[in-house]
Amino acid sequence: MKGKRVHANPQSSKHPDPFPMHKLKRVDKPTTRIVGKVERVDEREGGLNRATRGDFGSKVQQERFRFVQKHPISASLAGMTANFIDTVDGPVAPQKAPLADDPAVLTRHIKEFAYFLRSDLVGICELPGYAVYSHDKEGNGLELNHRYAICILVDQNYKTFNGSTGHDWISNSQSFLAYSHSAFISCIVASYIRKLGYPARAHHARNYQVVVPPILLWAGMGEMCRIGGAVLNPFLGPRFKAAVVTTDLPLVSDKPVDFGLQSFCSICKKCARECPAGAIPDGGKTIYNGYEDWRKNVEACTRFRVLNPNGAGCGRCIKVCPWNKADTLHHRASIWAVRHSVIASRILLWLDDILGYGRPVEKDRWWFDLEDVNREPGQEKYVVPTKHKQS
Image (cartoon, rainbow, N blue to C red; front, side):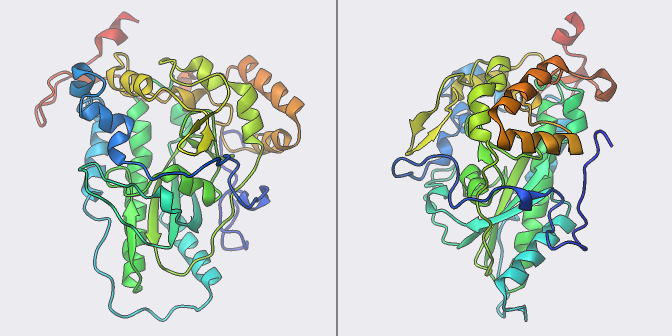
């Protein structure tokens, strides 16, 4: 059973999710403490967008445009994702389809549809106003008044992470695997809802109008973790990417979850210890924009990911996270233990290191380390990376 996902049968259960999300403790508000007014943020202030405009220096600005493209797998995935940039919205059917009047039935239907399209998890919430960007990457002011948000999570693939250091040549490909698949799913879900006669817009890695983490929190997809600005799911860990569909289709919201992560992350600190950029804090939370969070050093994180000489990007924090495990009954038992005992959390953390989690497993390594040194689209010249030859 090791390494295999334990699936529920969505057709024979009242819970369509492939993971037992219904067994988690549900709460009225996310476990991230809000201490003031949360303001809308400008998309241009994200780390990679700041790198694009030169905030972190000319070298980072230059490499920003090739750090995904320099490996053939991530370049191929990124090229596919680009096809979904302009498919996020479209005309709404003039007449509403004859649907069930019960929002609970529509909710089940939309979730089943997203799973049919190969989502790994789906959650729904009312769209928080502060989750809408104030401005997009071009500086255009944004207004988005849809009532609901549908979260679509796609796993970045446990086996590939198992064979990886987290900051080697497959790193960006792991991200763009999930980015491309979630973009595909979200655009189809949004299109389907519009054909039913309701407005809907997809939001994915190449065309967001929303900040994803607060939507994930309110939709019960996880809790904020020490990896600054990231949501961790108890069954996928931080090993996923998410797209969102906003809509006015009548739906029923999920509730936030509490599975003990705030306590766990307070004592774990493995991601901070292992971060090659030293970007993740090992201390307590700080206040940022009206909420409490472990705030990472965005410049240090972005700089390492973009300039990484031994790989394409970085996901070391995901790789070493104790929640990054294959979905087995053993892992699910560990989740139960963490929820009920701090002592159990400390024992599991000790075992995580003793058993070697976080180190690459060679039998699961399958990719070629290659780097494009030509930098001209259509004229790629791939070589075995120099740094790799020296190691």
